[in-house]
Image 1: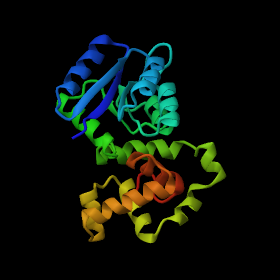
Image 2: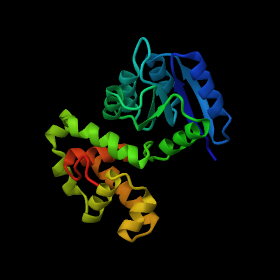
Image 3: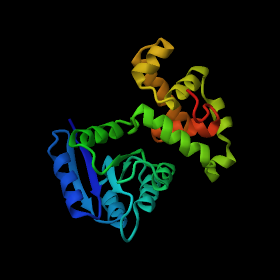
Image 4: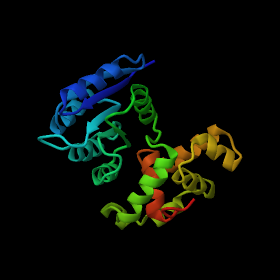
Length: 226
């Protein structure tokens, strides 16, 4: 099995080395490079083409937010996980808009770190269902749509989806897992995976986190609704 290739970017050497050692010890993960600032992180992604970039929010030379913007724009195959010492802050919100696939706190347990990398590499959201609902709900409720979406309103883009795909999107936005969506729609998990894949493809979204953001922006769900 091909290992998940990871770049770790953090200006604190102990954090960077510690995360690298934890991940390299996993049989299915390989740390291909480390970086001490955002500029080095972008260059490392350009050179190594990793599956996942672990990226600290606050770094010198180029901060993590700008690095996330550049990586997500130039290297869409690389998924970005933001590292932060704060549970929720504007930097994390901005990072999600820039294209990041989720975030981890720096005091994350080693098992959760490896699990998070695997989740994001497979296209899953790196936010627990309860956190998805709270974080993305607050985020989307107080942010306008991007300029690109202003040209093509999200509500119009929803029309590209079938009714079942729209329902899948709404359930995603509520933070349900594939198994929970399957139970809700009375279909198999394989069918749900197909619906999710179609939603992401038709709407041009990177992953489930951004499907949740889109659902709020498009009015498919309302922030705070159950």
